[in-house]
Length: 277
Image (tube, rainbow, N blue to C red):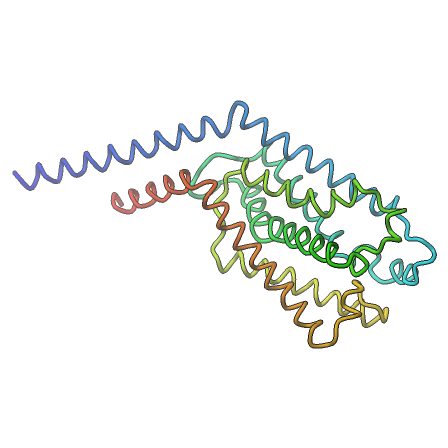
C-alpha cells in the first residue's frame, strides 16, 4: 500500500509538472502569436522582403558599370553580378524573408518541439545555416576591408553609379534585419551537423564559382585576390570559410540566449514525456 501511494504521488506530481510546463508554453504562445508581437514580426518580414526585392531589381537593372572600368565586358560575360557574394546574399535574404512572410500568413509560428509546418522548417533551416551567417559574413568582411582600403573591394569609381542607400541595403541591412528577425521569430536550430554542413557547403560552392570565373575571364572577382600572393590568397579564402562558420555558431549561440526560456520549457516537456512514456 505504501509503495502504491508513493507511485500515485509521483505520478500526480509528474502530471502536475507536465501541466505547468504546458501552461507556461501556452502563455508564451499567447504573447508570441498574437497582439503587437505578431504584427511586429509581420512588419519586419514585409519590409525586408520588399526592400531586398527592390534592391535586387535596382542593382541588376539600374546599376551600370562605368565604361572606363576595364572588367566591364567580363562582368557582363562571365557571371555578371551573380559572381559577387554580396549580390547572391541579397537574393538569399529576399528568398528567406519572403518565405518567412508566407509562413506568417499561412504557416505556423507557435513554440513547439518540432514544427508541423514544412514551410516553417525550410524557413528555419535557411535562416540558421545560410541567411544569418552569410549576411554577417558579407557585412563584417565588407566594412573591415572597406575601412582598411576601399579600392580593394569597392573602388571609389563606383560611387557615381552605386547609390549610398543601395550600398547599405546590400552590405549593412542584411545583417541588421537578420538580427531583428532573430528577436521576432522563435526557432530551434538544426542539429550541429546539419547546420554546419549546409553552411560550409554554400561558401565552398561560392569559392569554386570564384575559380570558374577566374579561369574563363582571367580576372579575380575581387581586386584583393589579385594583389595577394598565392599562399595568402588561399589563406584569405580559408578564413572566409572559417569566418562563415564562426557566424553560424554566433547565430546559434545568440538564438539560445534570446529564446532561452522557451527552449528550456521545450526541453522540460521532452524530458517529462520520456519519463511518462
